[in-house]
Each structure stands twice: as C-alpha cells, then as structure tokens.
Length: 437
Image (cartoon, rainbow, N blue to C red):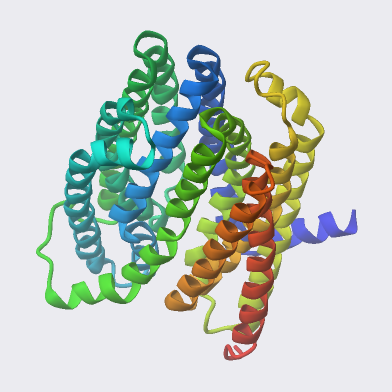
C-alpha cells in the first residue's frame, strides 16, 4: 500500500508521469482493443481457412512485414524524436521534418511495392515452395505501400504526443481489417483475407492524415509540403539508417524462422506457431506502446543523469511487471486458448514458451529505446545482430531435434534473455557517464 501511495504522489507532482500515463491509457483503451479485435478475427479466419491455409496466410503476412521494415528505413522513430524535440522550441522546423520523412516514406514505399510485385513469383516458388501464393503476395503489395507511409505518420503523431489520434486510427483500421479479412477469407480464401487486411491499413492512413492536420493547425503551422534541404538529409543517414538496420534484423529473422518451420515441418506446424504468436503480440502491445512513449521523454533527460536513470529503472520495472502479469494469465489459460483455434491446435507448449519470452522482450524493447535516446544507434544495431544470430542458431539446432514450433519459441526465449543481459550491462555503464544536474 505504501508503494502505491508513493507512486500516486509521484504522479500528482510529475509532468513526465502524467504524460506517460496519458499515453499508456490511450494505448490500452484504444490501440490494445484494436489488436484484440484483430486477434478475434484471426481465430475466426483459422476456423474458416483451416490449418493449412491459415499457415499460408501467416507466412504471407510475415513476408509483407519483412518488406515493410525494409521500406520504412527508420522514418517513424525519426519523426518521433525530432518532432518532439522541436515541438516546444523551434516548431518552425516541424514541417521540414514531416516533409522529409513523409517524402522518403512515399518514395521507399513505391520502390519496395514494385520490388515485391516483381519478385512475388520467385518468393512463392523458390522460397515458399508454393506457386499458388504468388497472387496473394502481390495483393499484399497494397498493404505494404500504405503500411510504410503509416509508419512515418504514426511516428509524427507520437512526436506530437497525440496518443488519442493514434489509438482512434488504429482502432478504426483494425475494425475494418477484422471485418473485411473475415469476409474475404469466407468468400475468397487466402487472397480475400489478404485484401481485407489491406483495407484496414488504408483506413489507418486516412485517419492519420486527419489527426496530423489537426496537430499542425494547433501549432499554427501549415500542413503542406516543404522543400527538402541538403542539410536535412543528414538526419536520414545519421539516425534513420541505423534505426532501420536495427529494425531490419527483426522482421526478416521472424520470416526466416517461419520459413524454417515450413521447410522442416510444413504449414500445419507453422499454423500452431502463428496461433501462439498472435497472443505473444497481444501481450506485448501495451508494453511496446509504453516504451515508444518513453523515447521522447528519455531524450529530454540525457542532460540529467539522475533523472534519466530513475526514469529508465521505473519504466523497466513497470513494463516487466505488467508483461509478467499478462504472460502468467495466458500461460494458465493456454490449453483453453489453443482450443479456440480448432482440434488441430492442441499443442499449448509454444504458447507457454512465447508468453514467458514476452517479459524479456518487453524489457529489451525499453532498453533499446533508451539507447535511441542516447543516439547509440549503431550499438543498438549490433545488439540486434547478436539477437538475430542467436535466435536462428538455437531454433535451427532444436528443429533438428524434431521440436517443431516449440523449437522456434525456445530460440526466441533464449535470445531475448541474453539480449536483456547484454543491453542492461551496456546501459548501466553509459548511464553512469551522463552528467549530473
């Protein structure tokens, strides 16, 4: 009780705590609800499509996500950092930052969309060993383009601290995604589900544009395109590029893990992993949103080492505790949860392992955001390379033991445990060097 009263007292007197609480509340009530809606749609689609086709839907979405990361080039986190930095000071710089990130997002979205359209057949036949996946992958190019632009827009809204707008847009898009993905799966199978999935991203794009225009008007700025100067390009190469390379380690790694399951045990075993992974994403959503909220706040505290360390410690404890509670609940209900997907989804062990991994994954994410706030972008990239290599190696070794989806889940757990240890050791040393107030 004393701890709770102490936290409430800190909240009443701390502007930082109030800002983070506001963002966390909107993330939980709006955005987490949106993810829950999509998860329910996934359960319905699993029953409509069956185990084999649901596995195909999973590998297509993973393939698209890999190209999304390739095309986003770290623009979202760049928008967040610099818009939040200029918002209370040199706000006249915001239109230039927005034009820079939005222009690059549009250009990279076009390039990567064209790339996936041209390579869809090669991916389907050469890597996934199923030529019938060519058309669904090409349909996913629509999703790809809007998702890349949405990443930059969400970053801008985060920089404006417009958490309500992010929550509303994501909820509206997710409802449309759930409805049209289910209808598409029912009438047109995997291709219909992918098309319905894409409609949700278009809705998010339209909502984001509306809320960004509001934020510009609130600051007395014009929401128009501004010419990009050569000096602005330095931000792309010094901040966006290493951020993109760090993120690029994640989606391709999970795509490779899924491909390894398909080649070793087939789409049926991948479907078991996909069902478990949906709940992993659900557990992590609120902790991930909180860690994103922490980025602009921690960036403002680098000149005060004591406050930086206190805020980082508090965030790690909060996120770790919240994630542990949710993960424990999912573990206890794992048998019932997997039964929702059908009789073929009886193995609950991958879900239990992935649920445990979320505790370490959530803490690792806040530690990574801390390195972003310290502009240690290339160091963060190095840690992600180590994480990816460890995940793949452990998973490959365990797949050889016939563990199927359990092998991938265990590889993820082991890699995140070591990732937490390495990042914590590094940040402890770096935070100790920050100046005193």
